[in-house]
Length: 257
Image (cartoon, rainbow, N blue to C red):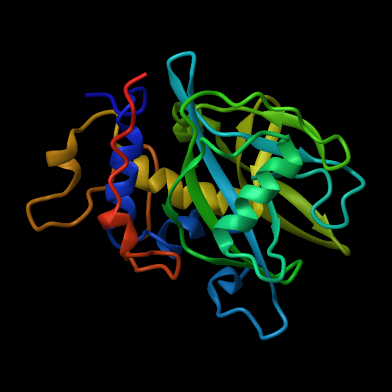
């Protein structure tokens, strides 16, 4: 069964989120040079908290997720590719913040959006944000209407495209006279790099191999998660702070549409 195009993919993801998360082992493959592992350090006391949303939806026979090209007028990470998200406001949960930001940036209703679980927290030291990624699913493609004050363009890659090793590369970045390499995923002429690519790397490590193996084959004889050919992980599969037991308890039972 090819889960990368099948309606049962959300159920598979819920089960994967119930296992120890890949965490830094997967994220580090896309860490820019000179990061020195800072994305995985405990965030400082003054770090701001933020949430982003990986929203899955099935369209034209393939599972996709929305990425946004941030407006050049944004205060942080202007002109970069990102996931819908932003700072968590007082009194909000991570999940509530992710849903609110989705509605604000892409102006879609969230009543039909179902949360599947959380990925590992990542510290974006360049802007001092501790970011928690949420994974959710929509029963159909939302009627996206990008908020032009925040979003310059909307990208809708398929999971198969994001997993394609031929889209992997690296480019040079210059900051304050310092040049360094940054791994990226290329899509429609855009480079997805930095924290966004690191978050995607962990998520793709969860779904990698879903197109070539069934549920019974998702773990090896010793009970460990097997590594697929598309996304390579580090040797250690470590429990990330975003991993929650709730993932193993949730049953998506996704409607066959």
